[in-house]
Length: 257
Image 1: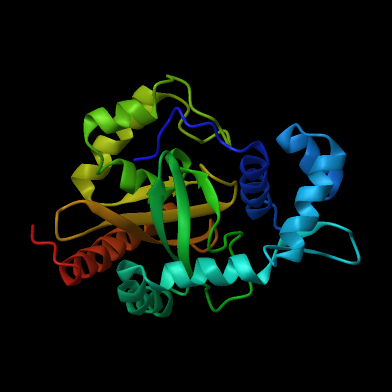
Image 2: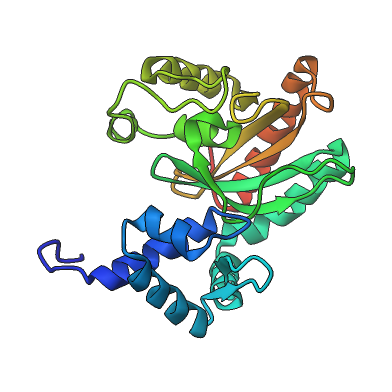
């Protein structure tokens, strides 16, 4: 256990904040933008950015002057993901889902009230989803996130959602804790979750929970596509498909229902 009374080092805390901020910025950010995000002077921000870049954790793009994640941090992240058994075991199922549907398949885990994508297999078509391994997003507006939230004990859900109001990404996003709780109950009954343009207009997704040998949610697996690719009439059949894949993967991980 980390001693909560031990003071943290401000520069280290800022460096970690910078890495997290840039992980959410596909096009990178310059010194000014980063300094505003971490509420620090440009001079000290510049020093931290240079240190991280010289260590290989960041790199600076010559054309824009923006900083992006460096190869070292991406490599370390890949090493960590490779050790995740569920990710290794899920790759065959992701491939099957893409091959069977022509859609994009994802594997994700829950971190607090956010969803983190840990694997992705693109559709063979021209249209690609705006997702990437490592991307974080509010769980309540995604199919995979809602599937995972539906598996949580009630007290854990209450811890994560103390506020009654939820952030809205689109006009279709669930905006209240009570409405989310009702939706999670429906997900538990049917065995899969749906995102009907709740995370982004023009995109629909379905997802189901993967359980480990202890019966805890290990991840969620699902499919994403445009509203043209996934009609509302198709949601049920795709949801059942993800539910079957999640069930098979759960059994491989040792889960017995």
